[in-house]
Image (tube, rainbow, N blue to C red; front, top):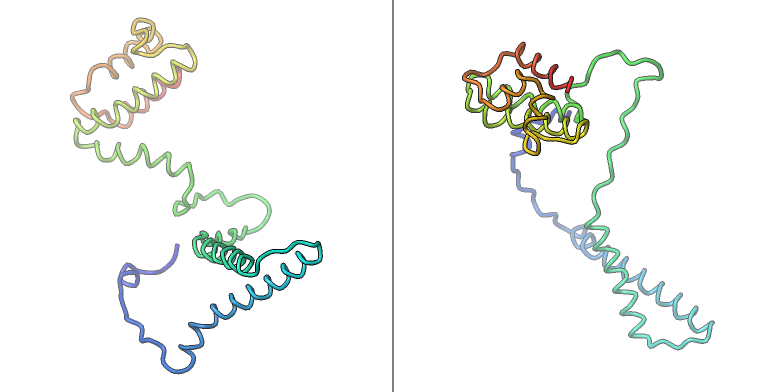
Length: 194
């Protein structure tokens, strides 16, 4: 991560306008360069077309070349920035076994999808009932659908048998208190055995 602070990002210092002949040169240089490229391309195309026996109006040829150069310039301005260089590997061989928690990866994203709601609901049972419990129910339904072709909605009787009484009761009746991490571990183990 960069060491830029929020104050550095939000600071605003007005830059003075450049003065002197360099300011005038910098404005016209890209225009003159584009016109030189356009003139060179028109000359090459005109000679090439005449060599194969084709006659094209000079204003049409100039307009076409300028249009192509304008489109090229606009697409260059709208192109995304180049990707950052690949991270340098520390060396070949085994990794040190530590996890880089600052890196953005799919594993961390998946963990955060569960970690934040579980943390938010640790003291509020209604938050657990509204956010976490439906996710666990979706996981149970998807697991049963993939392995057995049923969901709690499509075949409640068979789903109840597959889930077991404890997991079925947990999913169907909202708990009066937020389950402890140990209780959740048992529920997840039962869910994995479905």
